[in-house]
Length: 175
Image 1: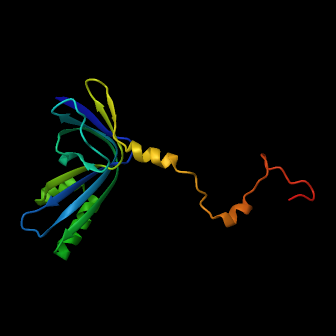
Image 2: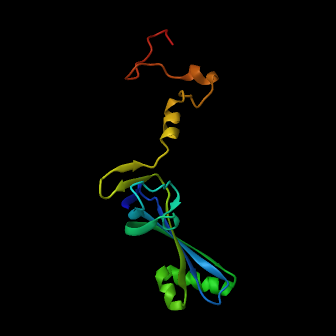
Image 3: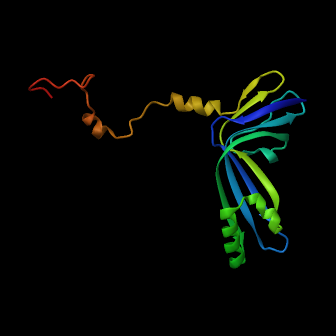
């Protein structure tokens, strides 16, 4: 059995999506919060690292998972998808002045939570310090091996400035 630290490689890449429902109400409220950084612990049954890739919902990844930390919530968006237009307007007004967690006072409860890491992952064995590269190395190498292409066609090649640094002026009579 091994425990692995799982973190995003890039900031602003953790997306927490909560679905709030209320008994007797047709519809739901979806609240999405973006986090700058975070860490999770994932347990595997042997020393094999977890098979996780960018875009994983860490809470539904077929491994035992524990939230360690989330840092610096940097955005929050809500989507109110309820049938009753009057209720929708009341909820929009309520959420302008209150936290999503204040919905509990109105009888709403968080029915489901997704935690998506939307970039390459840093996966490290907590006991040994072994770091696993979760990015697609073959794809990255293929990109580097492609010949460089100019973003314009050969018909514009003659317009490329050829003066030497620091932008020497051509001699009189030369172009």
